[in-house]
Length: 414
Image (cartoon, rainbow, N blue to C red; front, side, top):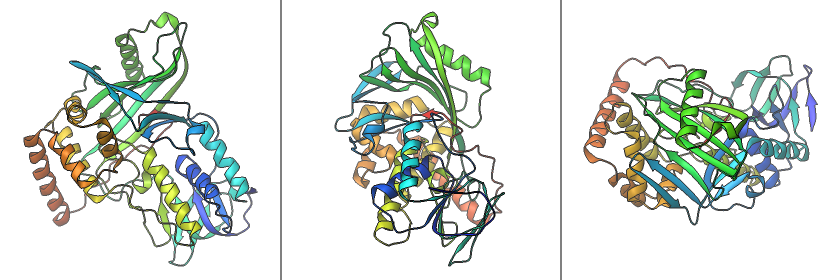
């Protein structure tokens, strides 16, 4: 690895803007696919280290990711006030990955790839169709054949519905065994529901004495610090955990956009966006990690084959349409969040629901999933979405609302 901090011009084949999860996964993928003949620069003002966030996701066992996992579970629980359901995920598993091992692997890959690190933020990106000029604050000008940009970016226009997935989690250490390490709580809707939105708790146990316990909301606005702490304390009590026998070892917070607003994955000919900025966040659920990992692997594969570093869309267009309809139905009160997810899991195999939420189901499977929702509210939401799209085409553009950075740091069921 070469560090560059002065103002000397730097010519590279590939510039990575940002150094968080998406860029780290991409560096590891480039190393894994033996992409050795490219000059690479990483432009980021800080070196990412340690546990600043946690990802949870599902999928088949993976020889690449499994050595990095903190824990994984073959079963998950989905709870409502009326019922607690245990789901067998076979052949999938739910897994937890903390950021430290991802950053460490990326640092090793960066050295093996002989990448140049520019310790400065990118301020301006100019694409003339043949080269991209990246001007940095206090660092060199970078001239790149391609730019892969994973920095948080606003959407291209306002969405018809804009919510946030926001959460706070406590890493709890208990004096005695109180957690079931063989099972994660995926969604526990026994939490008090907000007037407009969805709330749930979840539990990711690493051992019988150590777990991440989190409170999450899907809603238009954030809570105060005191509000998150009160919600978490109430959920801890709901789980029957004695606070006298618990210690909070770490606190994690995060905010993820849930909106049908478009995030262009290719804003100019030689600039490609990754992560949430490139559409990796699933609008109706906030799920991000699996799509981000797919993007990194696809980019590395095409570069290894000598083709442009352009991944496939994170989700099929039909899924983005279904997300817009589901968000609208939830936002306008046509369906309740707990009922929506309960019906999905009650009327479909768990594997189908999880693959649907990841955007990898077939059209036939999606029809089965859609048939498990309440028909009339979804028809109303579909009609409303179509009318809104028509108004967008003929009316003046709406202002883009401020959306917090994709993940401000923390754990997420995504």
